[in-house]
Image: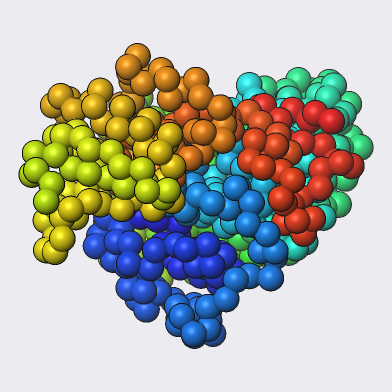
Length: 381
Length: 164
């Protein structure tokens, strides 16, 4: 059975390893693959200093009680494996499930250093994206998580790393409307965590709702940090276009991957066209068939594009494909609508063939059918 | 010598319990001890009080006739776990006793009892703040540097709501 000390070793947590070891974690425990922690330590770690620190801690001569262990209350009496068993029941869903409720585990992790070391490994996946795409509990989670981060930042003795563990934050703009407490909490979370991936969900918003959130968007852009991946779901609203354009402008120097779902307005496209480092673009539901549409102009401006994913399309993509001008293009995937006609597919093929001739680095072209994701055409070059 | 059909267990204060060995067929510690060579007069169960050992043996007696497969991983929440009414006595006991039974289950390596007590412990932790959890576990002994003081800040409560 995989134990917390396996987790500590796998993620390279010298601190977690030391705590678990000091509290009697079994170094001979084997995981489901028959590996003891030392196997993982020697196989997975490339950081020699961490490996050395852990191996030295295995040495009984060097083993000592951690300095924070000044008493032996009943709290510490339970072996690590038992605590792991107990915490496992705090997870209502299997490990890694996107809807996992982390609240109870997080609270348990704040009880003492030993519990933190055990629970932290179990929280690893969930902490990366603590707000799964579930609107019903979103506002409460945001507010609760802000409280956790504030608490963790003060609890320096335990070196709680929750502020650095978060890599993805999803923003449901409609749930923020008329909820200033949630807006404030979200801005604080963004400011503390500085996530690499951000999802902006504006698809359930009205124009008036978005217009009323101008101060929020200004502050959101102000704490954008170094976002490299951006997912935007939007409807074509004037104010949505304004706000999203402003946010993209704030992250233009670091943005490398963008996913657009919905029809992007001119300001959004214009801001995107200035993101010179974007190398991966995924576009769903954009007006790709219109000559000189803003999104096609954006495609033409993104000269560093290497990976392009276009879907769901039911029309002529000639204009969009002709806009793929960058010389770095490596793969193009097109997902067609089920109603796309044979003529359109033939045209698409012809355009992609010309694209292949223009781009020496293009290695892969695929056209897929959305219902079964059956490949209609696949060209490996 | 003990009768092979019976096992004698000695608690930390010297109290002895002689029970049919069939009761303890799910205890890995006892089974390993039976398979080992050497004196088999009595098995010492250190760190377990007579009261707790009596409770553990009651659990073993209740489940002696169970035909279910031995539990490989008591921490696997994906395995179906239905509350057995015969175990209600364990669910109703005070926190400190439950803690001792959890430790005894671990010492005797009885996965079914480990799962029962761990699940009950988790249900008591469920929804509680760090301070409330500490209060369950002998809070007087905690040193200041061991704990997170929440006096001035909000708690992560049920569904993330802040409570002061």
